[in-house]
Image (tube, rainbow, N blue to C red; front, top):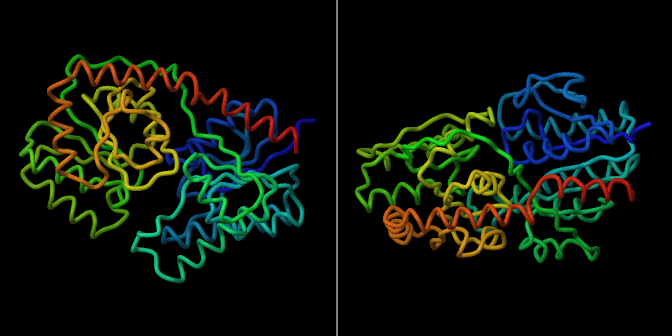
Length: 359
């Protein structure tokens, strides 16, 4: 009989967020070897029960993103403790750490950290910071195996545990096949949630400095933070910018990426962005912020970097990219080749398989 694994924190397949897409890729590659149950919430999926080789247990969502996540975590915990029957549980996100000591009453736990809360993020108050610090401590203290998708975060997580934290990155499938448009006439920015940490405001300010009037497309959930939405709409006044709501269908999103002249990735904070890797997997040139999480993935011969949060430097890099398309395309080819050796989902799924089997 196949061993049984429950997945917490993916929230639902088909995936459209970073953690859900990452988990879905691993599950798809390993579902013939393990009996998977995905704990999900109806705000993220309508696929209930056994389908595509795994089972989804879906809880009803409630209003409010944060309270919805909290109730999802608690319901998942209670169901697994009192009604579940698994050989181990895969938990995602350090914010889920508070449930791990309770899961350990019955189960072995593999825990994957997918990012950190930046200390200078003013939206988190004292109570929130206390909760995240406590959850992070419990995440590393009580899990049997702790993993991070970001190599630079290893030194941060060493503050929470004396045990070794493993580095297993996110990945991509590199066999994507799309018909490329001969007329690549737009710059693209895309994020699941368009929040300040994703840096869209830096991008728009750089366009205003250039008085840029060529076509730009911005894809993602603009309603996550209403005040930030107002700021972005104000910055986009008089620019040729099309805003498109979050695209949950992978092939549709990839078609937009594939046909972009280049992609601007101005984030202030990441774990290891699926979007960054996916753009590179389509051989689309990238202009990236120089945060250490990005630099740990690609070098200066693979993407074009700008100083994080500096719209003046970004405007210069956009101008350079427009004037040097052949060099940008060469960077894109180099980035794609990097994926072949270090970031293929098939290799990453095998790393998880080794861990599961050893446990």
